[in-house]
Length: 337
Image 1 (cartoon, rainbow, N blue to C red):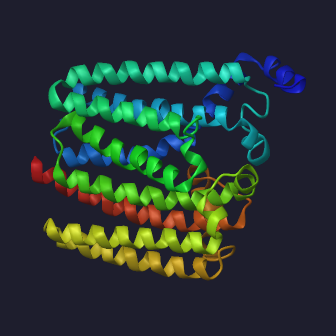
Image 2: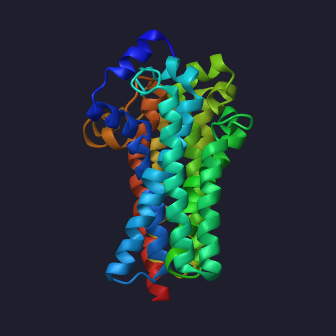
């Protein structure tokens, strides 16, 4: 760390230092795991309106949100310091608000808290469910570390990083939430698979924001390898196949109304995808107001044109997918009640 950064770190007040440590955990990213956790709980059909179950639910969200996701974000910032100096110089470490030593303490403490709560919940559940829960949490923490840390550094190659994110955010969360309250439901496993592929599609488009830095540092994001337009095409194909597979599953489960909802959602998605594919920089500009005013704080903002197009699409896609996902989870849960 240079002298200027060291001075900035030491001059912060306690309140500013705490705020910087929380920012290192990247609270915006915590939200991304909550829908899958909620879907896993709903799909179990076993949560009861008792203080005990509400406490379990609270600990579940803390474990996979601020602690699990926060751990991965903190580790990422620590090992990506050189890259962040170029792409995101205002982050806590490159800006000098947190030293590298303080960053290590940040993710070590969060890791210890996550392991403690995870072990406690696993012992409380007991049996095969407790084992599944603990394995899910351990796998999530391992993925969170090797995604950014050498020698593996999975994020350097999109063919490793995207599946790792899909497993962490889409599969592990669903299975752990289900196991916390009941035996694993087969339908919930399928919802986890759908979320796995949806997460892959979103992560490859999210790399638009760091294309310049990725190219200069040797990161093999799909955008660097094939360009923005082809990246959109690959992501859109995956997303459309997810919705199509979801519709087939809904039909097989006997949820005909849900099937038609999913098909309608797919049609809307394609209508938004077409102008973005035609013009990756300005396509679907009619949605920009939603990004700037309605959802900007939740999904992020960007000065990169292609990434802004992704954010515009994400508003529509995420709403449609969440509505169908929660509807499916609720219907599955009612089946097992």
